[in-house]
Length: 285
Image 1 (cartoon, rainbow, N blue to C red):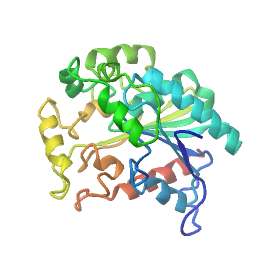
Image 2: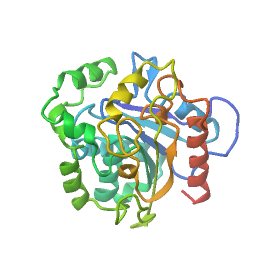
Image 3: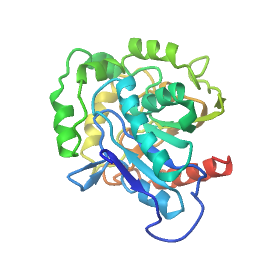
Image 4: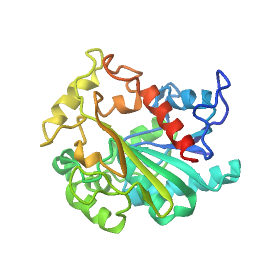
């Protein structure tokens, strides 16, 4: 199962708080991975924590840099594997950053595979950082990250970055509008074609002085014209039922990075994920 990691049984405890009916599938963002060197996990501590509460969790890996359509098709192939392994017809998709666009694509073209879509810090209206980076990027970084994580998925950094620009995301939204708000910063439809839609994001940037990446996100945040997590604006992240759009998280904190160096003044990301799994469970998902 290249690019697919399973967390199908609890490592500790025997609770049922996160025991959803359908498997939880985590989809990373641009430049993301499942694990680097087998040491640094993208979803730091999250799969293990959800599994400890009874959930079946799968971590996927797609091209580090490519369009949501290309990455989405790679994700569909892994969902077919998960369905064959588990016997469950559908999954609960959770996508971070560009992964949020990937899972939206999957839900639109293969709704038979999807019970719910949850996006975290996803640029549903594009990101002004991508607007700036458009035509100023290269494929090298994606290839390097892919090699370090053991992935050989095709990279297209120019297409990947361009797909996150405001103009390209507007075209994407015209084709795949499910769950999008009708007006800026509103909530979208929470139920579309039998699929539940949820989202959350942060508006913190400099959240932990020990995290060396906070400074870079601080610089990137200056490109946005609204409150943001360092890369994605608060309103741009809205989709379906908005759980919350002002966590004291930056873009990496949202997935408990780097190695849990997050703000001590906000809910632990593990708790946020745990509570959401319970929300899915209570919704029969």
